[in-house]
Image (tube, rainbow, N blue to C red; front, side):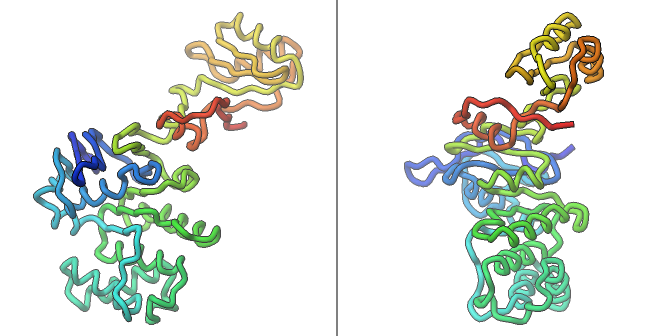
Length: 316
């Protein structure tokens, strides 16, 4: 099966500066978070994948080589740049129609699709007004509509919530999370805002200093164990007593406090073992959940700047 993106020793230099260095990755998923600190190389990677800048190595998007099939890739991929890219004096419908025509659509069809894209983006009431008068949130919506106008299979969204107030950010994330089902497209969401990824993404690609540090699912990033074997348990009292009972049953336990412990279940066991042993020991289980790190903690661990803190639990 063809991956959305395949990278093989992808490198981009600007003079003596290496912006991205020997990237190797196979990227799949429906909504992929492209993560990294500012300057990690995220925008350079997106421009390389679109065939907009030359590079060394190999990059394929939807099975197409970005160095030789950039125009074909751009026919199938929508791009929402980080910076504003509007033409002075244009209304939103004029801008979206122009973008549709640039993608090869006849003017009439481009205009029809422009109205549909702006309606989806929530700008139907303002589509004839000059973009210069729009708020930051409205300008971001125009950029999203422009990326959608030619009905792409894949969307590259570069910092789509950058500079938005909390309400506008929430609305933009809602639009993004609905896109795969409503528009049938996959998404690469480039951002340094980790809560955005936690909310809408199922996969992640993490970059740091121009290199790939992680590729995989969000659950793999956060460290959810296969079979849900690692648990966070809170009891009313005497966590050490429960740890002893569970250790006798083959579990591995770490007492975190007088009322909490981390339990690694033995093979084929379920969380029912915790409740059974607690009942036999006369203890009350107050909370139980899967152990996993937050996306923020996992991100810091991956880039080598992790604080010394315990993972969080998904409470039951």
